[in-house]
Length: 465
Image (cartoon, rainbow, N blue to C red; front, top):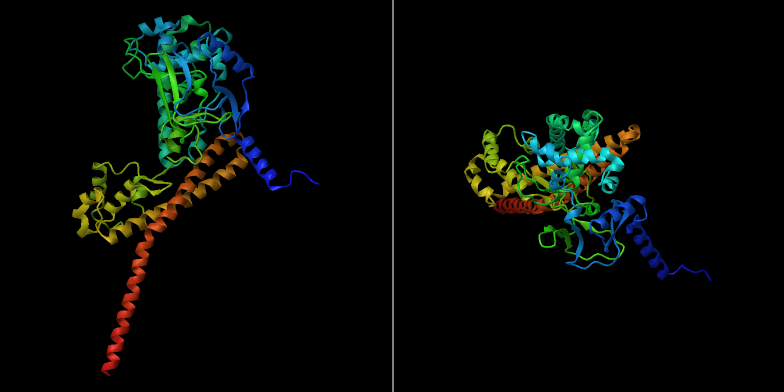
């Protein structure tokens, strides 16, 4: 008799397969994590809930050792483990920061400390933490220019702004770096290179948690709200979880409390905020699959692309939209075109005799069936335009992946973003089609009635003859 062929066995195999796909591989035995745990224990932290693991899809993260209940504190990291501007001021950099004018920003202080400690190597007290930080990042500022050119236009513009901002940050900091020369035997220019500062900037930008500090005279007036949180920052993002995260003034610990349960040996997630995928890629260097907050942005030039060029009131309509903040954040989402997008299109589609009703449009009132139908038609054309553009970019990325092997990871990241946007656009196209159904049925019924009217007239004429 053959064993393991029945229905029960198939269900068991499916469960085991799902478990193996979602369950992480324990990494707590690795030397870097053993050293990190010792370092954290010396600073009064020893976690009993979570262990480092590698997961399919998300990579390195934290896995639950036990079942976690809703409302439970999943991690409580003592203040002594946090890397803040207080840490920097108490260090060998403190005296140099205090006398530099104009005062450096809190961000510059943190980045300088990270670069300096990384350069110190084995001599750094923070080495166990530095060892588990990423060696490289995938924020747009770190990507190849030809890869950034493949971004959707709104993201591409922000990525270029980000690159320019980091370049300016580096250039404006050179004088401060030069003042630190007495601390080093090597030339500071070789230590505080653009590449080194970029790594430090990405570390703070992608991994810091919010902890508000009192304003210091030693720093510029920029908000001092960043803290690096060793071990805690291994937690990955999921848009579907809810957590409470804050520094507890009573316990002097940074605490994360989960609003949902988690089973034993599952990955534990936190939520960085209700961010769409373009924001996640810009700020954190990744894309979230099936992100409920994901959307496709419609720029001003695309907004008017399918509107009649003969509309003499178009400039006035655009001006009204700008004055009332209806020209930005117009999107397609999983639930179709946003209310803001449809409202903007309804105003742009107003006939000359309807133009005086523009305020009612912004308040959400229906002006006419013709206006409703026209705005939906334009929304559908824009959606189809985006679908064609997305398919073309995906095809281009596919070809580039075959030729640019060195950039394949970066190209895969871009491919993931566009693939998710294509799914959103396809969902929006279906919703737009359903929204237009009542207008098609109305037109159809109108046609039947007119046909019947013509038949009655013909019958009357025959009778008279």
